[in-house]
Length: 432
Image (cartoon, rainbow, N blue to C red; front, side, top):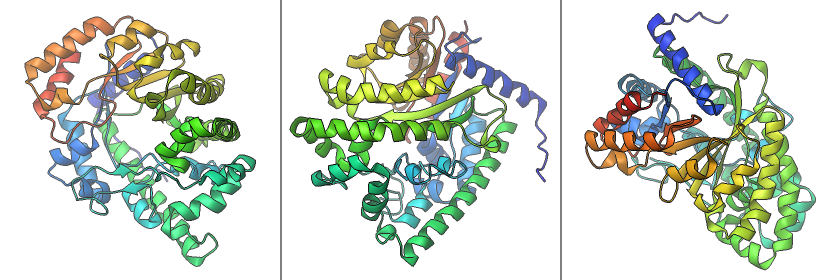
């Protein structure tokens, strides 16, 4: 039987105010003020006196650090907790007929990395020094999928991923039908159960502090070309292929796009027990990588058009896609105007010169998320931070549909007083 949770009434009111504020902003509407959202895992570890290895691998220490950040920094939304690396998306394909399992298999924690011995990740205290951030390692130039493998992949993507890629990316799955491989999957299942229990416990404690998710559920999807580049061919390999064998790449993109669409819809519509009842929003999350490396004609044909197909299918099913555009997306901002108005959340890692350009081009067509560069928290003074936030909000907060955020994690050496200054500044100048 589920234990009842007693919630402080003051924090319950704060919680509902925050959720309403965030939901309105993500719906491209005008809330009472601009929400501020902070991603803080590496900083939260350092702030609590932990190495990042301890934060990634010790659940009790992770809990204390996450709650300390939540208590000390009064943002509207915070991303803290057990870090997970956004990789190995193709594992979802093998579990697409198991919606109760698939949503937990897209991201991998440090302990799951240890169990798999996968070749995509490097983790602190393992392949890296204890206080380094984990790293995603792209396949080498010839990739996990060789040039001659394209034909097999195009003919049957799922069989190819299962039979060829799994043995190449994981040392413990090199022989899929072995006792070692079976044991690896059993251990992964046990670790998922352990982590989900922890995540529920942390969510309950954060709720008592007034924090919660503005989304009822978060699904996952991937730009089809990035899928091939990130997981199969590597960045160098896929860029070479675009110039040397473009027709083959196009066939591969066309082959994987329906599967990515199916997985996006499936992970966005989970069993009822995995949903959060407090929000009407369901989103699907994605990031981009190759976009800033492509010229316009390659971006439009090979990257945007297949990606847009997946996005539009999600929107048809009342799922609001959220995409973090890594790198400089400035040259491609106008493509977002092709999407249905008010149905998309665009998070920007960086723009030239800054987030003002996104508002200038996009207006209120999409929800714009960003505006807090890492350097803001490392250098300067609280007064300089306040001035920056004040000037930015004057230029971009109207007419709504804007969330002030760092999007990528706070630098571990951020000055706490600068973080607090940004939070206080939005509370002072962000009202509509």
